[in-house]
View 1 (cartoon, rainbow, N blue to C red):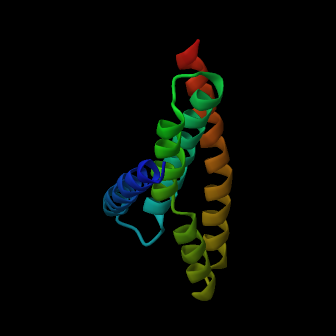
View 2: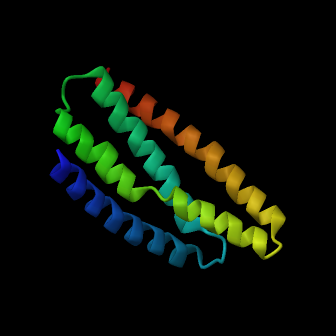
Length: 124
C-alpha cells in the first residue's frame, strides 16, 4: 500500500510543479494564481475520486490510496497556500491576502462539490 501512495505522491508533486508553474507564467502576476488553480483542481479531483470510491466498487483500496492519499496529497498545496497568505500579510497586503484566502477556501469547497456532481453524472 505504501508504494501505491508513494507513486501517487510523486506524480502529484510533479503535476503540482508543472501546473502551478504553467498557470503562474500564463497569468504573469505576483498573485499566487498557480497555487490557487492547483488547490481548486486538486479539490475537484479529490471529490471525484472519493465519490467514485464510496459509491462504486470500481476502485480497489490500492487504487483509491494511489489517487487520494498519494496523487491528491502530493498535488494539493495548502501548505504553500498558508505560506503565501502569511507572506502577503507580512508585506502589508491585507486585502490581497484576504481575497486569496477567501477565494481558496470557498472555491475549493465548490470544486469538491463539482467533483461529487461530476462523479454522480458519470455514474448515472
